[in-house]
Image (cartoon, rainbow, N blue to C red):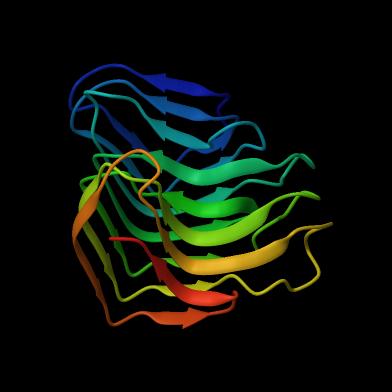
Length: 182
């Protein structure tokens, strides 16, 4: 068992923890493996500017304490591989240099004015790879309001998006499967 973590040491490895609270990554080349993160506040996993993360074989639960997390992982410079993300309003925020592979995003939890996106980028998004994932944003009765929006919401609110690779995924739910601005 562990409480919230701030990972501020380069090349730090976290393996096999059951974390109750959020994880903030402030250093380059951090690795999280075989870990469950239960956080219902802000972002369960937040990668800060100048930091980078690889998270593998882990679970991110955004509703374990009854709250609502805006997104399982945010914002840039991370690789998420074989990660089970659920209970958040959006699966991930992907604002640049993001790889999501072989992962499961499902059972998103919506507040009254929320709309669910599996993967969301609001601009400044370059070099995103979304490969071999199962992303299901359909409401299955776990939320208490809001509506599913799109599996991929790629916007330009904060800048342009470019160099996205989306391949071999199983996508389900939303008003759009892919909603992208140039």
